[in-house]
Image (cartoon, rainbow, N blue to C red; front, side, top):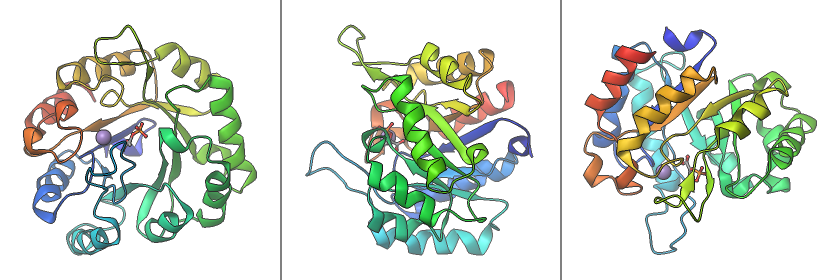
Length: 247
Ligand code: PEP
Ligand code: MN
């Protein structure tokens, strides 16, 4: 299994939308011996009218996937934006994701420690899009003081807000490399880090070339129909080509 080695590779849609949507992604993971799949039930959205995620209704889809894929074969990566959401995802997730908007939600970080158990592989802490590396590391310390072992905290660089980048976001490899010096694994999210599908694979490849610890990439069976973040979604075919040639 590729991801039983040192590096961490996470693939999947921006949001879990339906069983029909996630099934081809799960099948792709199986074909390549990869296990970490994005199955976000809760989405923090800028626009309150946008799709907010399936919420608790999405659990039924995870249950169905579990009938085909064991906990070792397919590991769910789920974001929690509140302690209520943590309670819903904790029994299902192998990876608890704390998103950029919540990097400094200190009460949430403390609560993660309370929900973290042996069934969880790690907590994925994304850098806020206007936060310094120092602040990122302090947030990681909240997780550790809350009870998450240091080796189970993985940092994820997802780009910072930029007034000069044509996509409005700039992936910061220097921040990632600097954070890695503190002994944390650091992975890159080239999807939110570029906001544009054509840049996702080149940036993913660059991340691995730089010796970073892995990538999290958004992909979708029909990218243009992705309910959220369609512009940065890549197809399963493009994802598989990357897996075959670069992992
Ligand atoms: C995500 O990865 O699902 C996400 C919402 O990203 P970010 O928190 O980096 O915006
Ligand atoms: Mn997204």
